[in-house]
Amino acid sequence: MALPSTIDQNFVQQYQATLYALSQQQKSKFVGCVRNESITGESKAFDRLGEAEVQEITVRHSETPNNEQPHTRRWVTPTNFDTNAYVDDADKLKMLINPTSEYTQNQARALGRKMDDIIITAALGSAAAGVTASTGTVAFKDEAISINGDGTVTTLGTLAAVATVDNITLAKIATMLRLFFDEDVDEQIPLYWAISPKDVQSMLQVQQITSSDYVAMRPLEAGSIVKFCGFNFFRSTRLTKDAVTSTAWRTFAWAQDGIIWASAKGVTSHIDELPTRRYTTQVYSVMNGGAVRMEGAKVHECLNKVA
Image (spheres, rainbow, N blue to C red):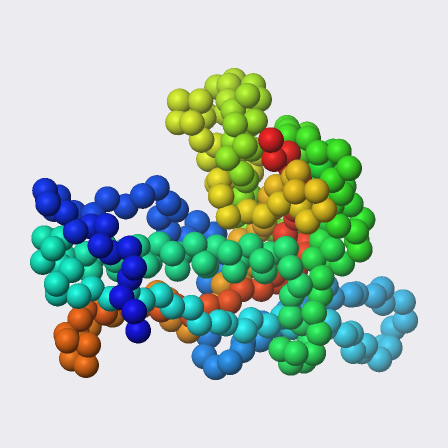
């Protein structure tokens, strides 16, 4: 197996004690904002219970009814991901530093970004549903209402449209909140909204979001939007664009328990010497995990302008 082809770029003649990590997302931004579960085995089922019905009692001493309790099921099938690097003793001598610790941190960053990609795909993609993990799937458009690029809302069975795409606005934010209210989502469950850097720029120019007359925090001073209108906002560069024109970011908001991240174990790293490779140091990191949207009522998309 070949050694890293770029490591010779750190063979220096004047030495620095540490490696400089280039700008990148440092950890998963989504995992802490969804419901976390452990998993054992190939797949795990998460059972759901729908609304119960009642009836009026109109006759004395009538028979006790047996009312149906609607049960359904969602599935998570986790996947394994890993990354590996070799550090030869001769490399360390030429670099005059030992990069194994930095390599481990860099691998953890990469696996954290992969977690976010998995959660984003699960939020807006098809969810495994049914008696078994392979019984069937439910498409996002068939169970969730979204906000079109122009701020109007979709109907079930229709993806958000990009005929006209506007920036994120106060009206869009209010509409998103109404979607959760329309679905009777428990107000005690935290709401999150992943937005693009362009959305942050747009929101910082809306007076109602930045003025102390409306909010207690100081977004203009911090240069970020933390919480507004009941949503915990955070920016992400992992969001995808619409598949039709690529002119809109597919931002989305969700209630915390509306998406599940399930893992047999989190990120695990190993640093080992390999006797069969002249005691080269191996830096190896691995993770296991998968995600599923639990219900469309708790996950809603909003298309916002890219540029």
